[in-house]
Length: 65
Length: 258
Image (cartoon, rainbow over all chains, first blue to last red; front, side, top):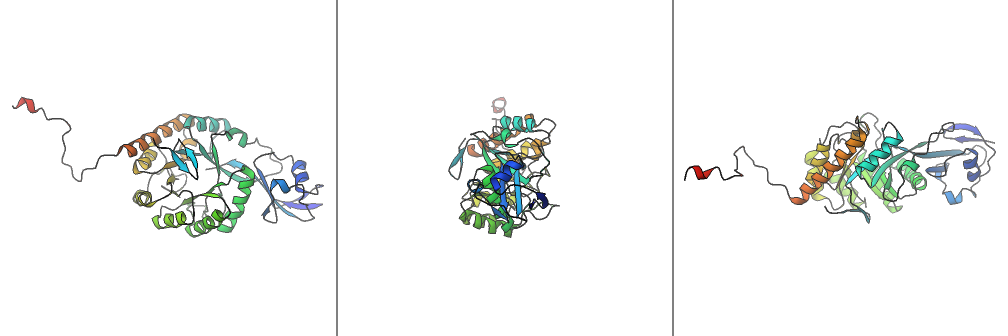
């Protein structure tokens, strides 16, 4: 199915956030994920379904002042 | 030197470091270690899916260092609250450097949005350290809203111009009941020492260390300047004479005349 990740259209076979995290090989720490501008806590990744057209934001830690 | 306490956490170092602009993660890590800092700021960005750069956090996380994620890039209080929730999840801390600067040219903080966001974030349980204008009235409002510190600017971010807001910083320090951290514009160890001599509780430095020819040596220079300035403040500086008349510190060879 198609979803939007950080404003880009992406094809994914993941059905929940935990699977998406694994599919994208994201780092285990320093990452946060939101759907429709609502942050999804890590403990809820597995139970949070991804649906067609979901608007997903994934951020990570970077250097900054 | 007195220990600095912010939101119940003790800091023996009064120098906080930003992690931007270092030429490598290795140099950043060495500069952090050399500075003796116990708090470092970090930022967030959207993941680029093709990008597999190395994991920054592994260079920084040690039990002695408090991570202070910032909200750089947000333009409103609403965006700041969203960024704060993302930061709490990504960094595993409820400490936050709140910075809302909608203008990319001068990066000056938006006082109205900063105050609104502080009120909201304190209610959500964040330890809020707002980057703000050197405005004494605003700083009182931020304190009343529950900010853990205030972080007034010395000069615009990254300019290395020093304490251009000196007179206002003095008023803020005089009035504050929360720690005052001078943030932004500190370009030389002498600027940091000056802020500490005024009674600032800490300094946050990034560009001046990160872009130095030798960032590790510069980190040591700032560490020593902050300690010297703080010691001088605690020791009590002598009064500055209001005119040019000298005041002898030796007995003026009086023995020759008697």
